Every structure is written in structure tokens, then in C-alpha cells.
Image (cartoon, rainbow, N blue to C red; front, top):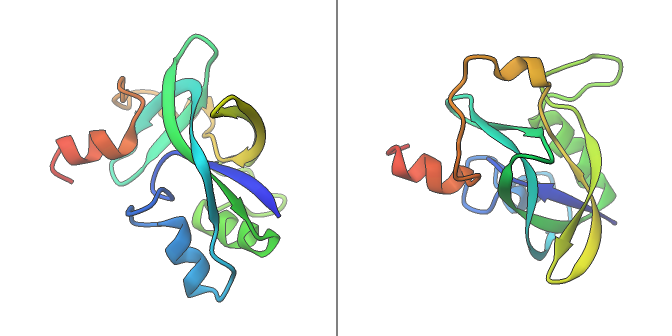
Length: 135
């Protein structure tokens, strides 16, 4: 088991809902650990967001799940992360605070140079942003 911080389409109810992804692949359901925020800048790629870590950024909202190790390969596939290929999303490790407890998580930020010219989501919340834009 490991933890993952999801901030965009992997959040519950979104197009790549992490629970639905596990179910489609016959993998144990992820367990919600809690909500958390991560400092950064969130950008709108249209159908999905991208997070650039930035200590001076806003609090980007997301959820932390405990997941079966088998689910990591599914998440990598969704985020188009392949060994030896540098893509848009880069799996990294971060520690976030969940109700006063530090939790180390895998997460998927984007390359800083990929966001040039894209609109920034200043609220730090992809779900709220998507809904307010009628998507």
C-alpha cells in the first residue's frame, strides 16, 4: 500500500475517478485518507489541470488515498507516464498534511515549461473551476 495525492481528474466524481479506475481493473478500492492542500500553481489544460509545485503558490486542493500498489501502474497509464520517456506528468513524492498528520504521497505534477500561456486556476481547486466554467 502507498498513498497518492490527487488534484484533478483522478478526484472522486471526475472523469478519471480513482475508485472507478481501480474497479475497472479489478484492483482493491482506494481508501480515502482525507483532504489536503499542496502549494503550487494550477493550470487549465482544457480537459484536465496541471500542477506546478511552487512554495509561493496557492493551496491546491486535493484528496489523499491509500492505494494498492497495483493501482500505481493504472494511474501511470492514465497520466501517460512510461519508463524512460519524459512526458507531461512526472510522478513525484511529496508530504502533505492530513488533519494534522504528515502523509507522504505519490503525485503527478507537470513540467513547468508545459504551462506557458495557459490560464491559471487561482482558486487552486480543479473541480470548482471546471463546474464554474460549465464543463
